[in-house]
Image (tube, one colour):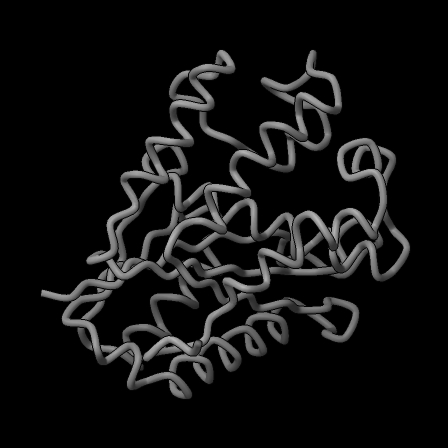
Length: 231
């Protein structure tokens, strides 16, 4: 039985536009379960364990801002952890699709939800043959925002009959943490394009040019291409 696992993460909220919350980002990481990722997962686990982070769940935004477990770490130490998760992500045989919404263009939550539903539905319809190539689709989400949970359930139940939703948490799946990393990098690209790089981000990534060269360039090669995979 062919199974597609989809790990969903988000960045932003459904509140009104503000300078502190100008975007809403949804990322889906797609993994054909027949592709074994145990080698890449074990490598990441070993590297983290050797760095004193046994069974550690990487949260990229607190990592950048020097919050929670990362309060006492120097910038280079935090970048090193970020880089380990990044290398894991780009070496895994996965694809990702990101949906980016500029809240300034949308007047209220209802319009944001409507735009989100249309774009995600369109993505599925345009790639229906890809999704129908699997016998089962499992959508993993932590139900962090009930609006997104409702939208995903409505769309997938309307477009695909062979799916189910499974509540999951970042601690259970490294690909969930990969989705978190991609959300953060997509947000950083938006901020860099609008000249909104923070001091914390500059300490980790040094410059917009370095962010693009060391992280975004490799990440974008994992963007969804459909099936069969494009060369």
